[in-house]
Length: 71
Image (cartoon, rainbow, N blue to C red; front, side, top):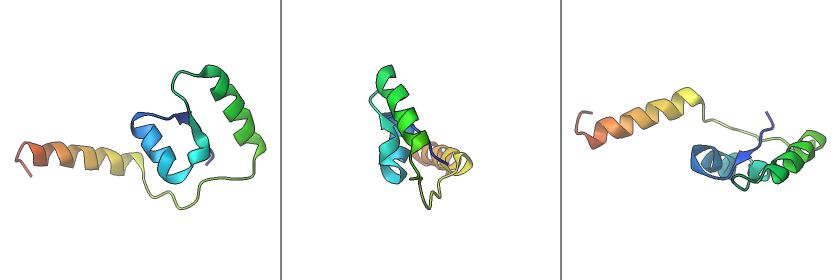
């Protein structure tokens, strides 16, 4: 799916990896509007996105368990 979002945090990291054109400068609502319109009009879309929210959540939990020495 085509998507756009802020270029920070987890969303920014995923967009940087899989769909850079979807990145929007944080808190720039004018750019968000323009980017959304541009993405809708474009035929480009991300390919081979293998990260799911379940996978990312599990990796986060695993990281904290390992950091706490409980893995």
